[in-house]
Image (cartoon, rainbow, N blue to C red; front, side):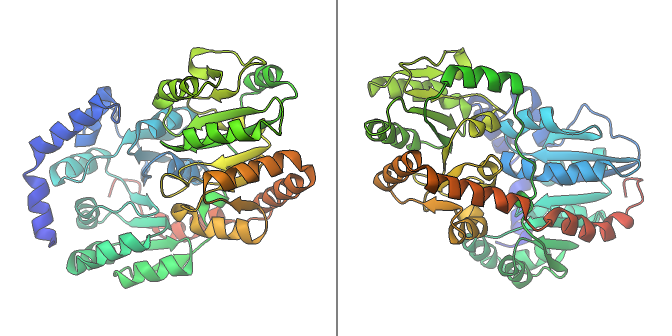
Length: 425
């Protein structure tokens, strides 16, 4: 596809895209009160001074950006606009963004909508997280002389092949990027192959992310409910992984009396369905969103709330990272490492491949490829204290000794920041 054809198709697709937005809103994937933001409209005024537009696809990338946003906001007369594409990220960022930062939903990649967004916000610098590149958005920023940096940059093999099929458009898009800070030399080479000119390498920002917050009052209450029961956690699960977690519970509880399994679905609105699944399997289940208590009979605790994952890492000895057995991509295992957990994940860790390989090589985590191997690992780690102690300590040491990707990324961005004038160029 040529860039001209892409622009034409997106230009004439206004009403179909509006229909898709309404359908996504009906499905709970868009905030109905904020659909206008997807079309580049905002009720908020642009703040005075320099405005830096940061964009992340979803919650994980937004969380990883928070330390950098903190640092950017500490600069005089600097405001950060963070955009993302999921309702979950919007809700969490509303709680965690520092003073001087604002969240909006990103406009969809249609020229009229992106132009409206840029005209209103007039960013002095745009920072894109990982691989969030859209042709119209990128070229419109280039036309307006807005410097663009792609940080923590990564391209899966599939994405790189996809872009390569559109050679001319890829070179136009990637060649207009002012700075790429890649997670690894491999990813740096992929960006250069597609036409990026100014490419550097820095450690993965997700290794530098802060530990997830924990509400101390809620923690005290949860620990009181659990008592001395052994606990394991299936974190950020996707469809199919909850049933696996329940089957693991049924098997492991024969050898680990009073076992409590906590399930935190990646999408909290699935909590009711997961409760029905557990009840249908004959397992006593409690649901956090309805304030169900944990008593001696509770086998499965479904934590279907937002912003509390750090709480459940804190009370869990063993953690399985979801989206890695029945779905692809994986979830960030560094989150669990902050809480000195013994970490397990499946074979689909494409989005965290370098981190997963490092953790496996150092004995900080263990990879499983089926329900059966997950059962064996959970059972062994809950029964054998020494083995889980070693894994917990190793994962914790990685956090304490991680290379500072934040400093290196911020240092690379300074050249672009020094070139912005704070007048919405």
